[in-house]
Image (cartoon, rainbow, N blue to C red; front, side):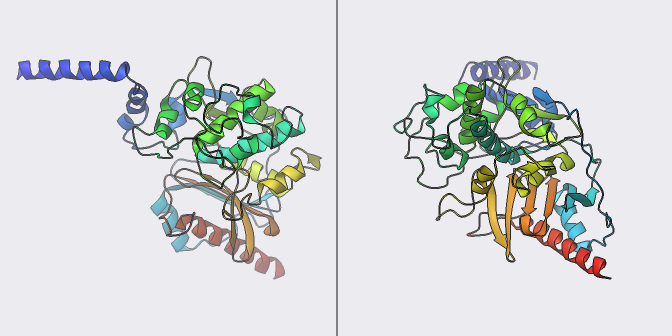
Length: 388
């Protein structure tokens, strides 16, 4: 037995060493930070296990006012059961720029941080619009190689920053969150995101249609970093976080602690109330309390499809028409959502541990429709209450 254990120990050490010196070194990071915690993928509080760049609260915080009907709603048992089933931790509604409803589950509350995952892609797209307004970037048609001259691939010379924001880059990429050897997994655990992204060439013709790839948003983040000369966190704070009056600090997950870069495709950790602020900014055509923070023309561009054949996506925003309502949303892994109903002046935020089942032939999962129905029903109930 002792000899067998010694042999096993030698094998494990050899295996560890082999992985460490291989191209799969990132797997050691994955095992330590995710798999040994009992998870099979990234999770809501995993930001605590990574290096982060801290984004301070605004020095002029603006708390959400409470609506006169705040939390005066009877919520159906069906919705509550669904929240339990999918592991919802926060469900918040903003009506007419006031808190209409909020409820938290488990040990979460208004200040609890939660990983945004891909919701942050909408923000990075907005930073592109801001960089254009600020004169760092000429337009959505400017070539990526103007900023990243080392970009490789047969179509590297033709891909534009607008192609990156609309997920039409032609970049080589496998979007797979659960495959240990996928480039998506590697991007989450690598200690050099810039090098990883530069190893993914522009191998197909850009602007040929929507094809969701997280690496494309990371490349956009690299463009913004080069164009502005600032970290994404610093530019985000100056452009949006501070002007929107964010009340709490946020954490933006990094690839390492040296020469670090934010994971531009994911991983801004904040709370439901502060996530809702960006939805308000877009709903109000880029204005915040009367001040134009983001160009309204870019906002309008963002919430309409670039490609007629792909109506579900604009410039970093997911798009849907539901029950005669035009809807646009920020959307992240495991069912993180900021859902905006502009005609209703209504915003819904849902954060949680899992999402619903896929719907055949539909880009969205069933849970999105459950949350949209709940938000619209509360909005309708509000109208009936005010008429009484």
